[in-house]
Length: 294
Image (cartoon, rainbow, N blue to C red; front, side, top):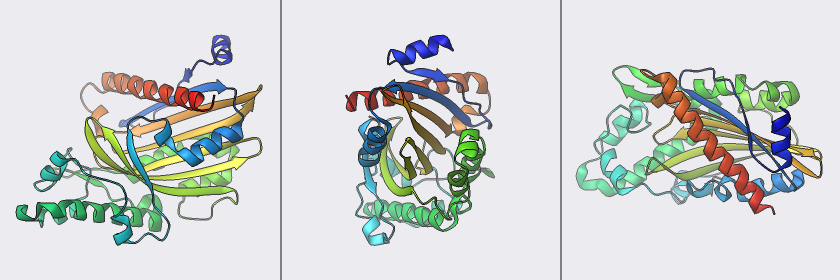
């Protein structure tokens, strides 16, 4: 513990353990001290978003509350050529994160109309955004893995929230709003939705993200929930807390990612490798925040 304080004083990233509560979960925590005030950190992330520090994000588009299907289709996202071709013959399994009904919808597209696959996929994304906005975690359709197996992102994200005792104990109103969305938000909370184009495992990936920022004079907290991910992992929740410390800020960053890839045979080793890879990415994010605010 004393060494961690020394490392923080020196501007180094310190990691801490975050308990995992699901066999498909990878969880990690990191912290850093920077010389910028908390309000500057929060404003930077509010205005720039994680695209400013996460090099895997190709693009991000704000989804306004009154977005229609036609305006949603104009948002900046493009499927990779291989994924466009593969979606024409997509079947339940691990290649794409889609519901049973969404797979059926794709199967109605004839190969001679391949150019319409992007249009149909964006309609699927729009309907998923609408479903979440109307019913929250209950409105997230499960991913059909075939042979009667499904992955339930809504259930995973609920586990992620219930596991956060800091949010429960220190921000109870925000905790309830996050758990029971949609509902009444705290008066000083600001929410945004984004369509993100992310590079994951060398594939362009659609991500639907819900972000809440609660800023106070003493600091701030940022909640991020990826309630739909195109492939490779199921869902994600991260929380960034920013508190005044010495002449700057202490930033805490916890991340919970759910993926079928770490379940089953060799689960322990898969968890260890996946967790370490995630922690290294998180450390880079904090260092990039620090460098951007110098």
